[in-house]
Image (cartoon, rainbow, N blue to C red; front, side, top):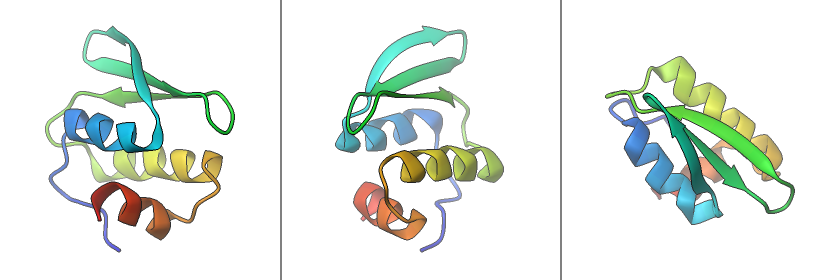
Length: 80
């Protein structure tokens, strides 16, 4: 599955809440979200419109690794 090309930071944060990530703090245009399952994991998401494709790919790769999913499985769960 291809990465979405026009995804904003706010949309990504909203999608990651499906996996249990919660907004914990914000500094300027960057939001830190945290998930406690299966282990505590922190991700910083820039509130850019749109996110750069490399930034999006890196965030999703990190989340997929922690959640023990492939990138395609993660994309299907988040964006269906």
